[in-house]
Length: 386
Length: 241
Image (cartoon, rainbow over all chains, first blue to last red; front, side):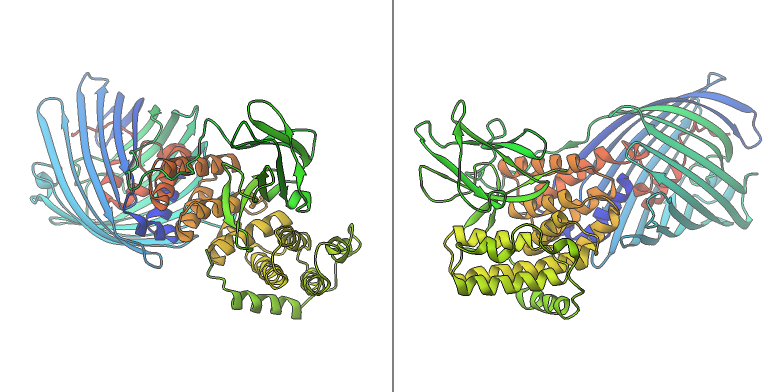
């Protein structure tokens, strides 16, 4: 899953690539989610709603920026809207350890009469190994004119985090996450303990969570909650997302606890990579994608037809040798348009090959990856898939 | 590019394997022409004897002989000096042994050859072991080959390993890994620094391949920003009472 990938990339075994940040590029992904939900807030009647939620996400090796919005039209005709801008910066990963500074601004309004905003900043430490990881940190927030201030007589809040995740070696087993989040807002003090099991493939994801809130001073009726969500990729750009369950009040956002069920369709863009910085001129052997110099074509089972492009139309003889010819030269036959070909048995795996033209020096076939050959020269390498 | 598995280290690995050599597997006996027969006429007698000794020792510990014979024949065809051929065969035997240690006893010949190539390029053995862990029961020939090809294009070994690992963690198929490698090469061809190209493309590929719940949205990744995590708990509508 992307979270695993980005976790691995940003704070874990892949941390070495963070040291290559010069010239690093941004990956931008946008999405629009449209759906419907039914929700029953604390001490309120159940209500249906139609929701629209756009989002923008920009990911670099050392930073993440997310901008999201959401607008809901309730059964009663009331409208609520929400916007959020959040970002994180990550340090280099050293032996699995990394740091993160984060910040966010969020605002939401209901009807035309109420509005609230909250800003928060946090600092976290992460550890990520291949199969497990942990996070700890704290966040400080300020929420004027919010539920927090109204109820707690204080606009500020502090929230801690202690979390861990485990990815079992068995592929069918879910990723397990456990988090403890203590919160202090004015005279309110409570701690949420939540566990999640998440099954993920490229096509679908299912997660189930359960949590409990403890503390002598809290608000709302939801103190235990369960939550299940799922997403399935219908096409490369369309995902069906659904979920249901309950959640406790969020003092910082001014959102009461609720029980809900929701279903939506998310349309995503293909992740766009920012243009590469032109640090150097293109190397002279840049791959000519439109004109490959070495091509493998299917032939009878166990064999491949190899096509090589000669450097000149005047070329009169093309030979190749490789591990699949016992390193004996084999002469190719002239095909069309400067191409020369031969059909040979080729087993699946990695193969090494050299070509020569008109009896010249053995060289790497045009377009192939070149590696040192242990004998003072170079050899071309290609792979035949099973 | 010399790897972290240096010559002396490889020699140690090879020596350990040879000292604990199990009985030669029946399948390896009489499989086609013997190495000595295949090398006869291609190498001088002294070089041939030295090479056959290395090959027999490697085969005795269950390493495939074919890649070693190929390496010797390559050297012969390229008219390399005998000492250089023997050194190349010995080095490859060590790398095949190290690849087996990293990949496990059930690694196929194709995986061992690709793994040896990756080690030769500078990939750490533990990175190869992790690849094995990510794809138990699936061939690693293509991921390892992509690794070596990225390194050959100038991507640092650590970066190449971490990008391929990250993509296998999101269950990238062989076709997707090959497409990733092709895109990195294209980016390098347009002037991008190799390692930056690999990192950028791996991010984009991982985003595209990532779990549908995370496409365009947020989940565990954004949970590190606690405020984001709280507001993204569900996609339910919100209203203030």
